Length: 275
Image (cartoon, rainbow, N blue to C red; front, side, top):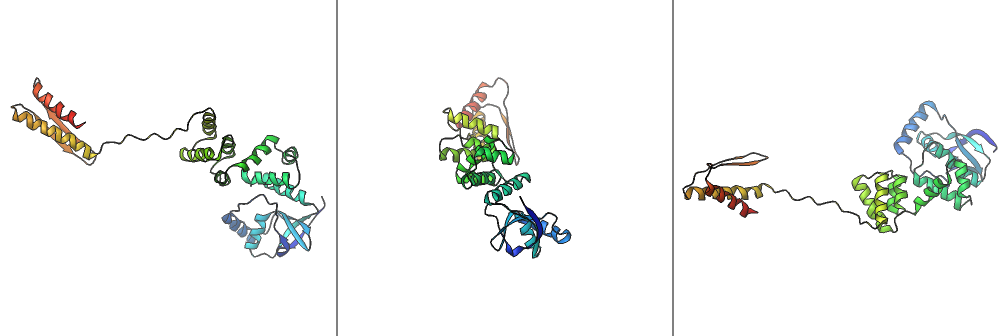
């Protein structure tokens, strides 16, 4: 490929329609802009001639930072390449910098395949990945929009996405996606869950906790014991009661003489009646 380096007017550069990267960090661009103001543009952008201007091939983040810094020109490497090579260079440059998430990669692979007729083997060879990697990444684009957005945002990984693709319908995918997020499930846990569903297991719902009796419930027991104590004394029995209440506890102690079976029976009867 022929190439030359020169200063190019920013206004004459149009963006790359094959840019695989869709998400640009505004804070990062501002930081780069400040660096450019102090040190200049260290790495040129890459462009190609098109009509009366230029088309950006690589370096959109740098371009945005240059505009932010108020520059009118940017150093550029001018390459003589066609549309297929533009898409290829953009993809490879971004992948080498590890700038793309799995959805952006999938979109880039799909463009190379559908628009430029490249086979998955050719794409794999160009980017230094395996053919299954390319195939599985493109398949992530088949997920429902909600799941794709979660992958794009990094809330789910490509491994989660591949596991979800094994499910037979959109409703199940959505249901399992919700559970992955709710339970912070790993890829391995997700795969196990999906395998279980495909084997006929139902998705288990979180167990409802048995309600804990509150102070109001405890008061019923308190009153039952007090009533038993009153009955014991009315019948000539002997018994003492000590009660304490704190912010966290209700405590009651009943002291009955050994051998007083009547008193024991009355207390047990009243407490059992509460249940």
